[in-house]
Image (cartoon, rainbow, N blue to C red):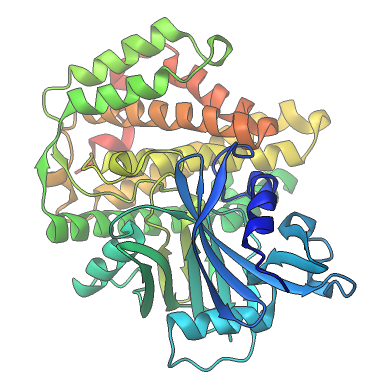
Amino acid sequence: MNDPVGTIEELLPEYLGRQRWFAGDAPNEVRIVQHEELDEGFGWMIVDADGARYQVLVGFRPAHEPPEFLHGNENAVLGTVDGTLAFDAVLDAGLARSLLARVAPGEKVHHVRPIGVEQSHTSLIYDDRLLLKIFRRLHEGTNPEIEITDKLAATGFTHVAAPLATWTWGDSHLAVVQPYLVGGAEGWALALTSLRDLYSADCDDPAQCGGDFAGEAWRLGEVTAAMHLALAEVFGTRDGDPAAWAAMAEAQLARLEEEDADQARAKDFVDSLRAVQSPGSAIRIHGDYHLGQVLRTDTGWFVLDFEGEPARPPDERQVFSSPLQDVAGMMRSFQYAAAVALAERGEAEHDDLVPMAAAWEGRNRRSFLEGYLRTEGIDALLPNVDDRPTVLSAFELDKAIYEVVYERSYRPGWLDIPRAAIAALLEPRDQSSQRGPLSLG
């Protein structure tokens, strides 16, 4: 086969625009800045797409013999190059084993399968023992996923999968190998199961129905607090900066459209954050914390994916912030789960189930916060009791605005979920009525 680089370069814009891990629509200009043949029929490339760099792995097979694993994965096909089919190499088991040999040369494996979920990276499981995470969008410097999990594990925090091997290009991390958490169940899936049980039951109180999630929410709150204490130990603490937090929220607010929220009221809400007098500490945080980033195993909860929100710039994802920013992310996730499970039931049942959705969300918010706030030592990192509702709600608003922008681009059918959250957050309320379990500790 002739040198395929030039032809592949022509195929890349349309291919990248179809990938879940690519940020945005098809790029206008793509060029290959580095390439190497890792194995026969296996090309590795770094591409520049409108100024952003991505890692692309390309497999090649005869075009007249399309492999079975491409059926149902048409978006993974780049096209034909000189009679050869070009596709995402991670779907080819043989090439996936070759990739692991490059990242972790000493590992011998037999079986490999991709994790078929929407992510900003690509993950492969080998022999139900190893997880290879391939970073698609590349940034200069240490990847936060590797930096944070390695340091947390070194402190004795056992709720992360510590890196076993890494692969780099220059000063950018390309991939990491971690232990695979066998038998783990994603928090998002567990929450949806709890909600489906609730919505199907002849029961009004989530505490009295089967599949109650509140106990897990409490334990997840404890693990989250332990994570924040470990992050504070490893990276240190700084004084909280409400003005900086408000500036970030204002930058998010500028991305909203008129139909998304009451702009004037949202601006007043952000101003209330700037007026906070006792903001507590700022620490390194997870940055994209939600039920899809935690895994429940037989030994407890594990925290995944410390890369931060992919739509935010790298410098913003690594800044020190209030621990309540992560807490706000989990609060938003409870609302998302309740709304998504509600949408599954159809319009005919919607009105009758809305009170149950609200009851489930409220119960699990309280349980998570109680587990979090009763953890010894966490109180010292947080704003004082009177300022906590303002800080938490402001970060919830910031997250909901991020979600509106994200859903508009990727899942417009879910756009009403964060819009409803913004409307609820901006509804005038008595400050004292917001305290609830935030006054614990």
